Image 1 (cartoon, one colour):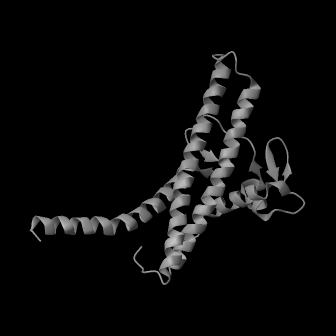
Image 2: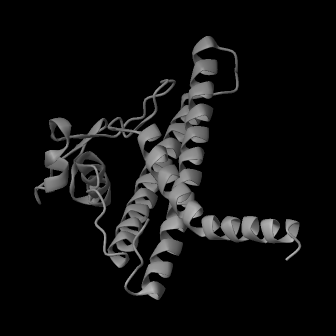
Length: 196
């Protein structure tokens, strides 16, 4: 972040929203991880017969929570990307293009109501849904993989990658905001030590 923005107020607003969505996406990622752990733990307890009160309906409800958290994460990640792009444009810079698979997944979820659905996957429906058609194998898995070490959003995108990108953006913004304040504080401390 070296360039001085042409319109400082547009830049500051874009930066504020980019920071909000980066932080919000990280919170949503934690919610997804929590829901996935709860569903995985419940499924394991059911399989081991360690929890006699748990039913398959209970597990299905937990899996539904995970699926919804994934969808909300993609909405949040999309907003983060939009505001980060707007922030860069206000500085006269261009941002690297969003990962194609992320964009396809998000668009497929957004237009899921246009897809042909079965118990396991969404397939391109009569409208053709180009994003869904362009996903690997032209399908969006509707299930949830439990107990995996590497969490995949909708079995397609690594959650770690989404978190890494949001954390990098949040850190970049934080450094820009805090950097001048820290520099001013250090200058004040030096002046104070010199008796100025």
